[in-house]
Length: 430
Ligand code: S3P
Image 1 (cartoon, helix red, strand yellow):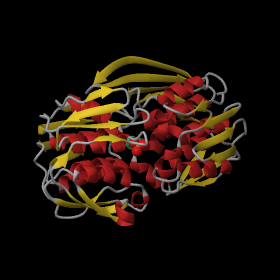
Image 2: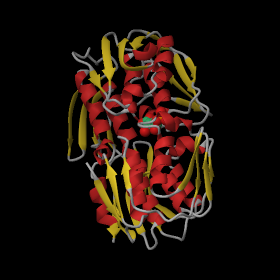
Image 3: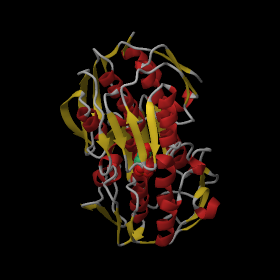
C-alpha cells in the first residue's frame, strides 16, 4: 500500500494514541501466568500484540478481545500453559518471540516458534544461549541462533546473566524464565533498558529487586490477575510530537501518554534540540507513570549529540529523531546505537537511505549516524523496507518536504500503529 503525504503547514489538535505495545505484550504474557482474570484496557490493536494473543491462545489460555480496546486473559497460574498443537507464530514481533522463549524454556513440553521473514533473520542466540545455560534444550537454524526455534523446556537453574547489550527483550526473557527456576535469577546490563516487565511483575505480586543495572527475581512467585489501563505508546506519539516540533505554528496535545523514564528519551532529546514540551496531569497506572503532553513549535530545532545510556531510552525513536536532525540547524551525531542494525530492518542503513532520498546530508557510522542538518526536504518516493517505524518516519519527513511524498509498503504501519495515517490527517493543517 502507498501512503501519500503532502507538505503540511502545521499540526494542531488534542488527541490520544493507541496503547503501548511493550506493556500490551506483557499484559498478555504475565496475565497468562497469573491466577485469575487480567483485564487490559486500551490494549494495542497493532499486529504485534495480536501475534502475542494468538501464541498464548495456542498455549491453552482463553483470551477474549480486543473488543473496544479491552482484552481479557483467563490466567491459569505458573503451571497452566499447555503444549501447543501447532507452531507458534510471532509474526514481525521480536518481543513476542524473545519473551515467549523465556517462558517456553521453563515448560514441561515441546514447542516451536517462528516469525515472518524479518523476524527469522534477527539474532536469537542472545536469549537462547542463556536459556540453554538455565537448562532448556533449544534448536534452530544457524546453530540455534535464528527462528524457527524448537524448545524442549523443563526444570531450570537460576543464573546470573551478564548481557553485553542493553535489551529489555533479553532481560525480560531471562527474568520470565527465572519465574520457573529454583532460587534467584539476575540480569545485568551495560545500561538500563525499559523496565515494564519488572513493573508489571511487581504489580501482579512478585518482588523483583533492582540494584544499579542489575535486576533480580526469585523463582515461583505468586502472581495474581489484575486490571490494567495501558498507557498511550510514547514510541507512536514520537512521530506526532516530532512533526509538531518541526512545523511552524504547531500546537499539539497528546493525552494519557506513558512517560516511563526508561522510554522518555525522545522528550529529553527534543527539548535539548529546542522544542517546547510541557508535561501535565501526571498520574500512575499499574505502576507506570502517565501524563498529558503538549508540544508547541518554538523555532528551528538544533542538532545534538546522543549516545551511551540515552540510547536504550529512545532506541525505537531514532528513525524519527534522525528526520528532526536533518531538518534542524547544525550537526547531529548518534553513537552507541549498533543495535539498530538488528531491528525490524537494518535501521542505520534504512534511515540513511530514507534521508538521502529527501536530499539530506547523512552518513552511516558503525554504531549510528551523522547528520548535517539544514537542507530543505524535497518530496520523494520512499520504501518502508517492511519496517513500520521507517514508514512513519518517512511520513513525518514528507510533512515537512516540498511537494508530494509517497511511502511504498506503508501497510507495515499496522504492526504498531493502526490508524496512524487517519490520526495524522486529523491533526494536519494544510
Ligand atoms: C522492546 C524492547 C526493545 C524495542 C522493542 C520493544 C520490548 O528491543 O526496540 O521495540 O518490548 O521489550 P530491545 O530490548 O531488544 O532493544
